[in-house]
Amino acid sequence: MTTVSGMSETRSEIIWYLMVEVLLFTFAALVHGGIVMPGHEHATAAMAETIIAIILAAGLIMSFVSPAQTRIVALITQGLALAGVIVGLIMIAIGIGPRTIRDLLVHAIMLITLVLGLIVAKRGMPT
Image (tube, rainbow, N blue to C red; front, side):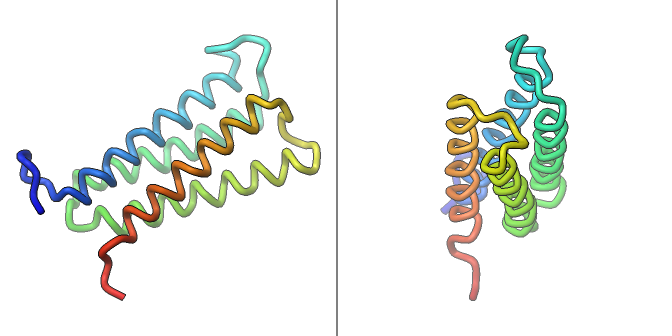
């Protein structure tokens, strides 16, 4: 199905997820960088979230540069981001990362958003 903009409904959803994810990881990086919420600085977390935001932003840009590759680009970039979130959760579990309820909640939101984004990107792909 094609939307008014000429973009497929699935591609629109993929792009929406990528945009939300870029914003989510950018916000988390700004928080851990002490820019949005001073007192919650964690340089390693800020660096990881920045790298993940850049990867997701690259995927978002590629979805416009090469529309036919949107699905595969989303699967790759969201998969890398998901791996990063899992590493972050492991760091929290072993006591290296920030361990606040807020950090756990943000990681849960990241995890859910990425998994849903991957499901949307995978949906309808030939097997």
